[in-house]
Image 1 (cartoon, helix red, strand yellow):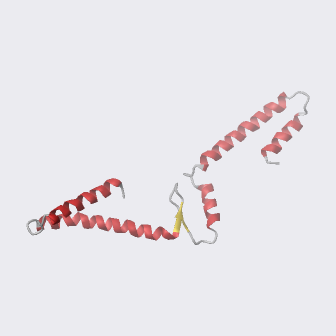
Image 2 (cartoon, helix red, strand yellow; image 1 turned 90 degrees about the vertical axis):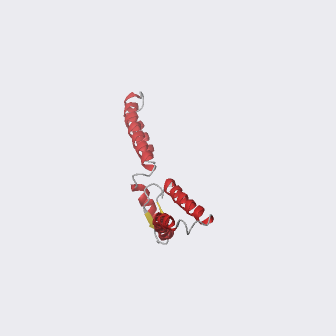
Image 3 (cartoon, rainbow, N blue to C red; image 1 turned 180 degrees about the vertical axis):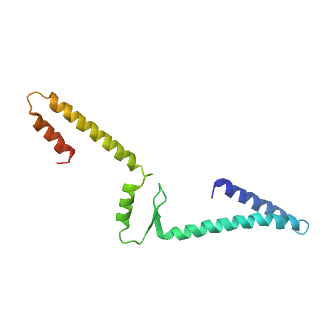
Length: 136
């Protein structure tokens, strides 16, 4: 529910309260009934929102795409970890793309370096950098 929708509900309630507080209910009964119709509709929407919140109590969710995970699942951490790896809206996608781009640039620099180093057998320099890239 948006802030504007909540503001509308509050205005409707305030208008109804004003009529009731001024003891004008009998005089304005048809208007009061008319004013109650949208308030009842608003309450239905609010109750639906509350029900949805209660339903989500047993879940945790992805803040980026709203995927839900049962809190009591035995492998919750595994499921969330797997989701993070595949969630298109997760900021880790940006870091993964940067990492890939930087690795490609490093491999290209390695090839240039191996060709430019004088006195080093290019296979040794290339192997050292390749091992570093692979985490060895």
